[in-house]
Length: 190
Image (cartoon, rainbow, N blue to C red; front, side, top):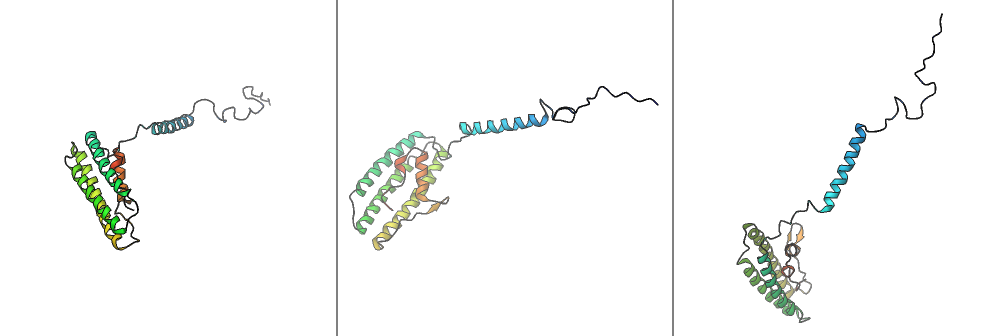
């Protein structure tokens, strides 16, 4: 019986770790390509986010900038008068209530002036009408406070809420979004 000669095409010593037919492959594999593609996609996504590209204009931002300029000028004049009255100093509760009533009357006249003429576009008019309605509701809160401080020395100024925020904050945010800092709530109460 003849003895078979050993095969010479297979190595007699085991290949180093990872080399050979059953070990990891070097170069491009489907998993590596997908992993690199996923990491690259995440990096590009955050680069896009931080670049500000997806930022949208606030829906309350008015396009009619001439109306905004006119409103800011009118608000600044009214708020200057209110600030002058407020600067008089400590006064009795009744005098303070009278001052708030006087300021509220000036603010109502201001709002009437802002409503006519309205902004040029229908979209701007709709947004301004809602803001003016919020302002009028805030004036109702001021009236209630003025009535309360006449009789209650511990009365507090409390505003109606809208969108889970106090109404004075809602009014102020609209003014800030539209670069009308003087059109925010008057600081003579609270």
